[in-house]
Image (tube, rainbow, N blue to C red; front, side):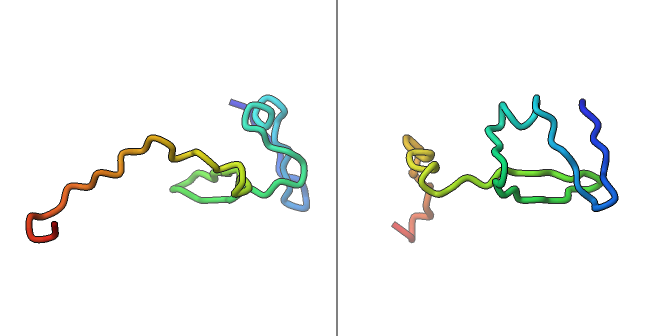
Length: 68
């Protein structure tokens, strides 16, 4: 686990060994979430990169007999 330091302007540097495998680029936006006592950063991908992400997903949904 890598530790980072918060600057006086509340900025951090994402270590190279974290950002490279995640494909994070300079200027890219990240979504920030808090979960309990954690902070999670999630890279926001452009919509055109999401093409095919759901390919092969099972869309069969069990339904009540009166809803067929």
